[in-house]
Length: 150
Image 1: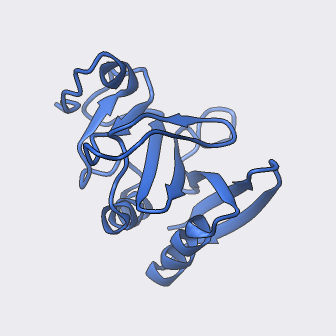
Image 2 (image 1 turned 30 degrees about the vertical axis):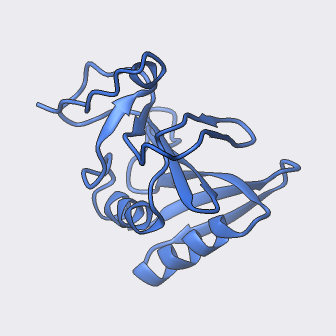
């Protein structure tokens, strides 16, 4: 399977990168660690919506010690969730911003778990289960209960 990634730098300049092997995903993570990368949109090429584009996406940003994710799209077993979801991350991770998205405090992941989540997304084309997720609204309300999947 293949992940199609659009990486944006601080100026808004975009570059495309695909990842279809574990080595490719490692190179993708390295590209995001690059200080010039602001954020990336990661789509799975095996799933598409009715308009031909992806029906789901991960947004990602890496800042020094922490990596951030946001997911929007259908969630198997949690069809009632319509809001973007974010990880329940390290409690000391600060918030950060990308070119288009904001990543709240406490949602940052350690790089190893972030990489594992990308591998799982590549394999399953679903919201990674190696990470505990919650809605952004719950983070904002200081009530980061884990997303329940049926």
